[in-house]
Length: 109
Image 1 (cartoon, rainbow, N blue to C red):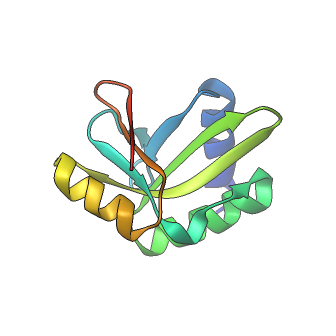
Image 2 (image 1 turned 90 degrees about the vertical axis):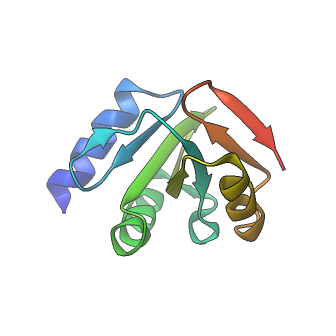
């Protein structure tokens, strides 16, 4: 687990403005609508990474992160290719927005 967490921290250093990564093969996810799961809201720093990782490994196997000021946020995320389905998942997970990887569009809910 420590090796995976170290790799994820390297992603954070390389892509501070944000990234989504598949935990099954530790590659970037580059397409689809990203929806954060409610369970990992406000996860930041190393403890946040550990919590988001634990939730992701049990569920979607996908993790996202981005830096906001001094804090780096981590989320267990789900990726959908259908906007309507992702919008519904966002509402169900009490998210304020979802993100489209293909276009960089942030959709406010």
